[in-house]
Structures are given as structure tokens and as C-alpha cells.
Length: 173
Image (cartoon, rainbow, N blue to C red; front, side):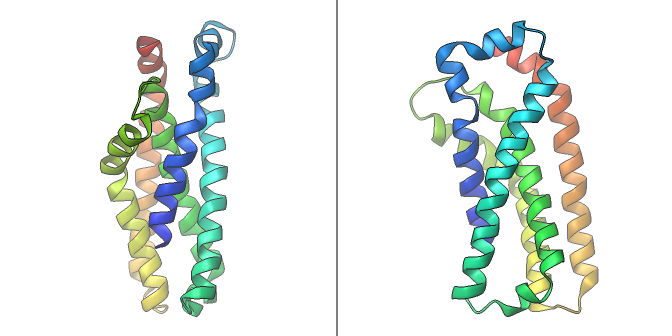
């Protein structure tokens, strides 16, 4: 339930991240101005990350209260770490994919269709780390391995997005 909330909140955050700039033509103006496209990407990704992390942390609190998930609360630092790693990776992907979709109808559905297949490995590794905390609090090997995979995917997504953002956005505008 936690990672479904992260995905839904991430798609919601990403759908509105560039929409206003694209409607008014400000995205083209920003790309022509003195602002580096990587700074634009990092700022939008940070906004998506904050929104997604807040939604995910609210889902953690709701899960702890409603589902008797006391084992999750037993390791709050580890759980918050997994949530932030997962939210960061999803935000890195969303920050790259969102400006490429334009303003057509069904934009949100198309965004979800593009983000979900790309983000599945990250979501699975974060869900596995969360499961290791919940079901096997002593099984730190599964937690560390899953978190390591998620951090590696985050680095891959961020490096790829920083490399691809400028040429993709310039060609789509």
C-alpha cells in the first residue's frame, strides 16, 4: 500500500510540474534564457520529490495507525531512508518524462503509462526493503541489498536524466 501511494502521488506531482509553463509558453522562454536546463530539471525534480515524500510519509503514518504496522515504526530511520530513496528515484524519472508529453488530452494516463514500466525495478526493490523491515526486522541483509539496488537505480535515473533532459526538451519544444 505504501508504494502504491508513492507511485500515485509521484504521478500526480509530475503531471502538474511542467503543465503551467507549457500552457503559457514559459518553458520555451526558460530554455532560451540564461537558466541552464539542468537547473530547471533539478528544481522541478526537487519539487516532485518534496510532494512525493510528503505523500509517502503520510501513507507511512496511515499504515502504522490503520494496519497495526508496529514493525515499520520500530525502525523509523531505515523506513524513512527507503521512502526517500524510492521517492527520489521516482521523482528523477518523473522530472524527465513529464515535460515530454505536451498538453494533449489523456496526458496523465500517458504519463503513468511511461513512468510505471520505467519505475517498476525501483518500486520492487523499495517494496522488498520495506517488506524486510516489516516481516523480518532482523534480516538486515535483504534490507541492505534491496536498498543498494534502489540507490543504484536512483543514480542511474539521475545520471540518465541529466544527460538526456536538455536534448529531449529542446527537441520537443
